[in-house]
Length: 552
Image (cartoon, rainbow, N blue to C red):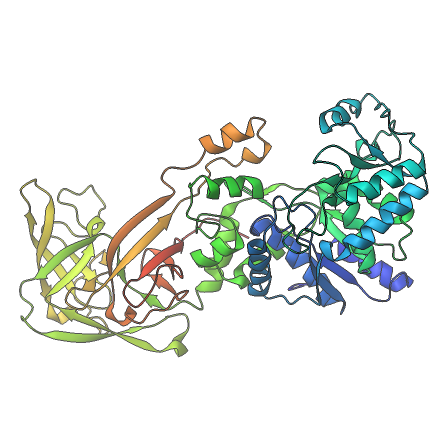
């Protein structure tokens, strides 16, 4: 792991190694390929791969592809890309579907042992007989079929003789168990669906709770790390490993999942946002997916540092989204070049500056990293400033431009506003200003002081750019706990989550490449959008603003 801070899972592994229970640590990251990975998965990736690396063990990437109705090779490829981008390499690449024959044989073993039976009840009927937390379940009328009859029916299920939902295979455990997961859970169902990996070879598919422990055991996983919602399924996990007579015995360990304020961590809900057009894809910068965060401009280092700082515990409290933003600021402040961009342009004509003259001013690329060197900025009679940096009738303590006031242009001169030009509707469309040539930055001018410094871009060589500013897509941190989740979820989509502005950047930005990152003076950190930035157009996504009140 990036930092070897103590946690209860790490302590378990150390104890197991010291006692000789295991000679090698084997972990796995086992996503279902039914959507793109999100920031919550990054914690599991960090934990599994980090522990494997720390103890010189192995970590597998395994796709739990047991439900062909929801899975797709697109998701498989995106998951591989995300894991690599985060900085991890898997030791083995596996699919649950690689083991379908083995799983089938283990199910046959259970049938022969009298520990599994074919049930003709519908899903609703099975649910009705399952019981509640306070009432025991009732046995299916098909529970006491003979092993011979069950085996015959299961073979016929595999051969495609029955339709979807006509029959299931259930484990025969205990309908009176206080743990509902042990009340004869379904372990195989019929689904005449083409599988992305096995095609039409199978029409019966194992349920996750049956498949997962078998996969872990086959791969020799020592520590099967999962989120705390699987804690109640641990007895079933252990039952499957024991009764299927697996040679290896993995240990399931649960930790608290990562929740972030104003962030939805449900692949089903995220898919709904994509399918219904609330966003422009899984990699929309407003999405908490790894691909969306990459497109927005987050760095893998910032994500790893963030999930590492959240720690490992059984609890699943929500982390403030400002904590995530803090880590990307900390990472980029020493990496991102500084530059100036105008998001809402207002033209300024400096009337006493010589017409046709252009001078080049020097500025540090990143003052915190002097070795990055210097950049040159053109300056001339016409520049653009931000509309927000001028007010005709300002309030008190407004230190930017207004009629008669003087400010410093960043890296340049003092200018004084002499006149505001308006259009027919009374909107200010241009400012007439004068400059003081004695006040050039870097010359040691010690005369009068000004209280405001504003940024600007020289007009004749300015490069047009589009700026995309983001706010949280979901504006309620408690949505994950909602009871009326479909209605509440969509009702809380923020209609103002994206603002698109058209402005200008410095001429040295002409050759900007997708995923190049910059700090724009006063505006924040921005990333060149990899989907829309080309030689003919530049689009910047704002990653984060410059300041945060969050303290680690």
